[in-house]
Amino acid sequence: MSGRPPAQAPPRPFFHSRWVQAPAHVRELGPDAGLPAGFRAAGVAAGIKASGNPDVGLLVCDAQAPVSAARFTSSGTPAAPVLLSLERCRLDSLRAVLVNSGCANAATGRRGLEDAAKTQGAAALAVGAQPAEVAVASTGGISHQLPVDALLKGILAARARLSGDGDRDFQRAIETTDAFEKRATLEVDLPSGSVRLSAQCKGAGMISPRFATMLCFVETDAAMAPDTADLLLGVCVKRSFDRASVDGQLSTNDTAILICSGASGVSIAPESDDELRFGEALDALLRQLAIMMVADGEGAGRIARVVVRGGHAESVEAAARAVANSPLVKAALHGGDPNWGRIVQAVGGALVETAPLAVDVAIEGVPVCSAGATIPYDGEAVERAVQAREVEYEIGLPGDGAETEVFFSDLSQDYVRVNADYTT
Image 1 (cartoon, rainbow, N blue to C red):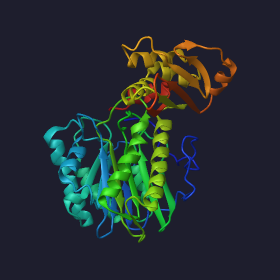
Image 2: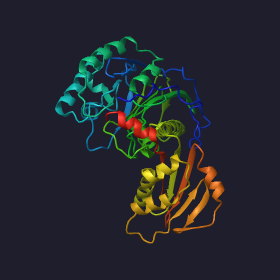
Image 3: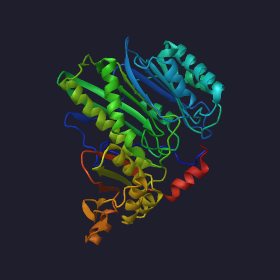
């Protein structure tokens, strides 16, 4: 296990990246604001982690008819809890989520599925729900069998501690190598009234576009139809967690779940101003959480955003991912080195058989390459720009009509140290 210290409080204010603007109708509440109405949570230490830190989390929605939506990893080797949730849960009407850290329950075969089902059933019994109404999620080392007895004890302990302000303990229970908390509670003013929106998220390594090694649980006291919840979560995940990369490694356990209690009495109708404004709030919340994961990045010192325009959807996506996942680009970012030749190399490697590729490159708005060739530029300005905590690269490809972005972290010595010590 990693020797990383327990996660600290999240950065304040929550919306602190220049790449995410808090909508005018959204107000960040303090770290002790608790969960939206209709939710309780708890996190306890059950002995799964050798560190003794909390490792079992329970989230419960007390509404009579909750509405939910979920997204999972696209990995070809999904973990047992992902398979179980996909195959046996009513993902549009979840009442509870059981989470453990310290063991991913991945690559564990039939026994892993049976173990996940046992804990799902126990959690359902503990909170008075049907097993199909309880999603399960795990994070930690791959290939280890789930310590079922410890988890069962953790479920009972967590049930006794469920409370409306239990989100901090729940957050701690889902973390692994996270260096700081990734959670927030927001108040969202809608035309039909005010609602609350909160989230708890974990993730720092094994993070790649097309989801990340992350768990994210989102709660709101707004009411909406299952189709609306599914649409909003799907769109916002594509603009947030799908855009995050730390190391280009696709996880086995990615899970994002949205649950709506409806306790506020405010109903969000499809294609309404309420839906638009709530969607803007959810989008900002998840994008900031995604950037926080990248900034955590298991030793990250700097983060970057690469924007690629032109060409077509496949080419801009390939170019953006190639830059974000290039060890050379990431090492240059870590050292504050404006070596944009590494960017050109990464793009060319992703778009083979396009020679001569007329690629444009700009760093923090300063053009350094045009149509595949170097141009005069202010070297000192670029040197200063890449020393910042957040650095932006822009890439232009021939053609127009397509655009994408990826947030990524640098490659540091700490990343190597953490992953050399942490069994994944």
